[in-house]
Length: 423
Image (tube, rainbow, N blue to C red; front, top):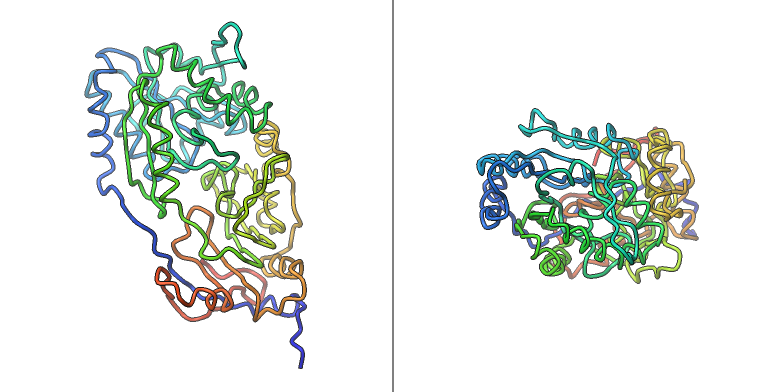
């Protein structure tokens, strides 16, 4: 008998096997102490009695509250007067209170950190003569005696170059608030790749940036490296830290996939909601698509609470669920998408009534593929790839791999009502 390939007859029968990938795992055990130790080499850059703005972004960085609190305490021990400014471009709906709320969702509040948080969308223009673009800085940060940058250095989801996500980008898009984000993003990828470094040089030339704390994470979303850099070291050292981050990125275990099921997406997972380096989709007009992985269809099933309704990145999926759709804050999402100018990523894909239907539609788009032969992966999100679920066809393709551990036997993915089993 010819096996039926119609996915709608088989979606509820999908069974996947849990596996564990082994990645290198260097990590810091006592993050708070490591921050204080790292900052010590830059103590000469902060004077007693100085007001210091600590620039903190909106990314879901591991141990962020611990890191920020340790920076605050260290500066206070040097008799400086630190305060925190949200450094996050258009995030938080492009509003001061929205950005304060984003920090609070990470546990960064005035009470928890032991210093004030000053959130404003007001900027000071610092555009020099014959500028390549306009230059802005957060008003509170500019009025302070100095600024300390805190950010994770990692591979960017929109472009590749010597400076991607890190201290350089934070000093521009983050500290420049919504006005700087609009200015840079209007130039598309050229603005990100070329104007961000140039603008950062103008910001550094003001003397306001005293130092930056660079964070690198391992493939398990854990803090593996902390390094304090003086302002004159940032442009030189960051490309080297970016290479370190790239070497420690996680990845999917295979390149050819029929359906990738992603449990959740969100701004705390990636700036694009879904890490494009993981799924192999760019969706930027004029930019080449990655050669791998090659995924025929992607379903996304939920939005993280820390996204606050910002669902930028839905356009990277082929199908989303009604659950995710109902959590979208169009104002926050549109603000982010319009600022970025990457409209493809803000589009709403097919909206399925439940999890099983989302998979059913996705599998149908793969052609006459029997469920027993389909190469299916299920991940929690694109940030956490150590443990995931794979179909039998995928497991067979990895039979000779020594870095893969099978954790259990095949289990159903969907309940009979169409909802998904917990990850």
